[in-house]
Length: 558
Image: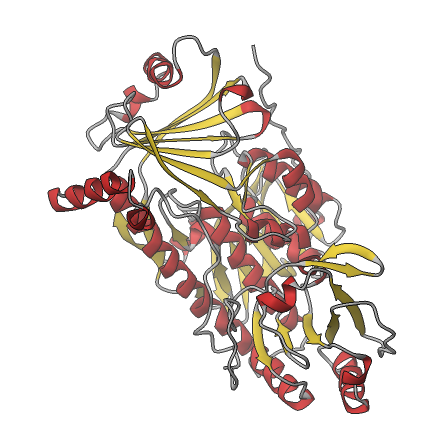
């Protein structure tokens, strides 16, 4: 009745590395060709770092799995050359609605601000995401994706790592200067290193049912029910994906039999009770899952780095899995690039684990709170939850307390040792350690967005109101920043078109609606310094080249 996805199969190809007498050494080997492994591969390869990706499978993930990709995920994917395909195929949404039984109690907007390139969220099945990243990897000469290459042993050897691999044509070995383990929640690399993840296992079972049906039945929004009238569990979640596939999550309770619940003869009546007997649908995929909130103590062991689910896991409420995973790789790859190029000390890599464990703890905390609210574990928690929900029907003060899975936002790495603390007062949300904001701009006489032009380098934002703001000293400072060993490309941000004789390495952008200036609380002479992963690392009220260089050196771990 409805079109379904055809899963591609990728060919095993024999590598020249399998025919050498001694293991060939590569700068970076990535284990796992899931979303995180491939984002890391693209990030490094498009910066010119040769990378090998090993995967024991030969297709994309079966089932929709990860579904919701937040604005930060899209901003990073834009920089990796995949963002537009995700947006074009995915279902855009900003609005979420919360119901108590049959009553709609409130709505929320994931992107209340205007003038951002990307929406609050895109819904897209994981298999499409992986397919697009496979295509992107195949377009890069410096990326080598090896299907049916199963890692069977990993051994640290001083300043490198020896990997033993099995293929359909027999075993071989590789040597890597650095390894990134992106091999999922049951990471074989983690086990081979004798490491573990620790945390809480939740005694809940949920049924995922992906059904294909007429798109006119529901709008492209996230709808969440507490105490749904059509289902005996405590919650149900509905949202739309590409190809008219709808994800429905049913809370089953801990005593449910997973094998029985995922049989089509049991799923279909449950879905019919939800949608109504008159709604035609096809069941595309189903799974019963439990979940944990846990993480490794450290995300690094020697020259092996762990990212995504291999390093940390959260419950699905809030869509923090893939969204936090891509922030891991985004954090790590620019540091590896700097170290491999000899432009930063190897100690810069020490910052990866503290920054990302800080982020993981924040995600785990928010995910745990969501889970405890959605499925309370004791009588007192249930009484509190139900009181909040009932008050929310009529009183706005109670609505912020309703937690139907508070959705992923990027953690602010305010405690990072790479930040330079403010010495003057700023009044805005974007602080050192936070991702830079977006905003509509005019660049090279065309409408554009700020974030589309930042990344994979250190960038400066210098705010001016007149050509007289660019004194000879400032112009000389901009020139020196642009030609140093690790260049800083500066965008001079003006409110209107003006004649500026900028040095090479600096360019002018027009803050079309004044939103960039407003969101960064910028004044005449304000300067922001961003890292290659678009995080603000320092800011100051007046241009001072020596302070900027000192802040950049700190961000480089010098």
